[in-house]
Length: 103
Image 1 (cartoon, rainbow, N blue to C red):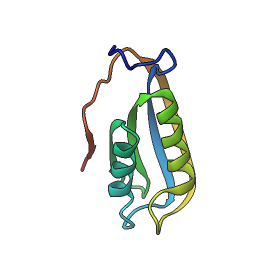
Image 2: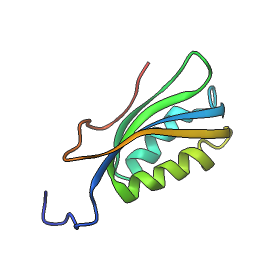
Image 3: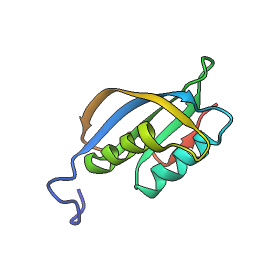
Image 4: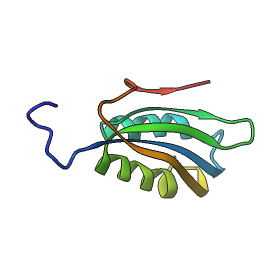
């Protein structure tokens, strides 16, 4: 823990899946950009069933912001019908580095 980590910045990890019109709309690129903007690490990828899945890790409050973004906002031309979040857990340290698109 560095000195600037406040007590309230416990790290969490959460898996996500976003449903709707989320492929072919630069959703992964925007997810990556938003994750980096919020200082999170993680990954994102398209699935064969037309959804986008991934994982994000970072300070709990930033992960919550990312969850709102994934369920409400997304990329400019996407239409999100719903987002599901699973396996949310507290972690001692980040298990990933950077924010990557997986294929």
